[in-house]
Length: 201
Image 1 (cartoon, helix red, strand yellow):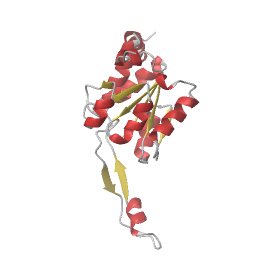
Image 2 (image 1 turned 90 degrees about the horizontal axis):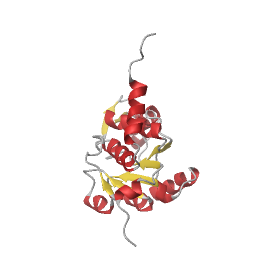
Image 3 (image 1 turned 120 degrees about the vertical axis):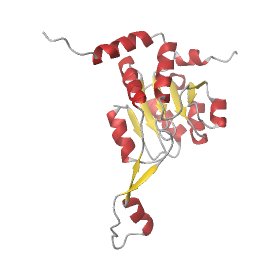
Image 4 (image 1 turned 90 degrees about the vertical axis):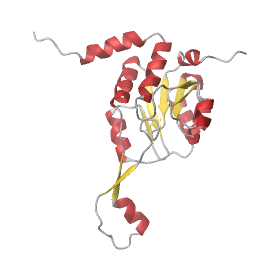
């Protein structure tokens, strides 16, 4: 059997799931101290966690990408090992359909979401940047790697984005899928219609 092209795989996609650090962000983690109060009975490890907040940077192009996906009826979501309130806030802002943090087994989570949506694995894509993402990528109908993903990840991807993680890579993935499905121009027109100034009556 001949291998399916990335475009052929993309034509079937109805769900796009992705990692956070290194995909939705550039992978850098910033920890900002918020105080030095010590609570009696609290271990130094717990105390240090309470005395800092995690800060991440997100790209506006990815925000537009998720809006375009929503207009197209393409479901989106994230699966990440870390737990961050910053990610939760951004995910709600982007109106993602699925938000899963603190996940150790990304493949199992991917398969559960696909099942919840009533889809087949070939109708779902997973996007990653590091080896921890390979299990979910291998289960997906379309495996996507960001431009600056580790070599092992790029090697197994069906599609590699032209932009790096945190620099519009999610937008690249959405655009690639919609173009493969022949829906890009229609969705873009609908998006521009939603965001054009209303004429005064």
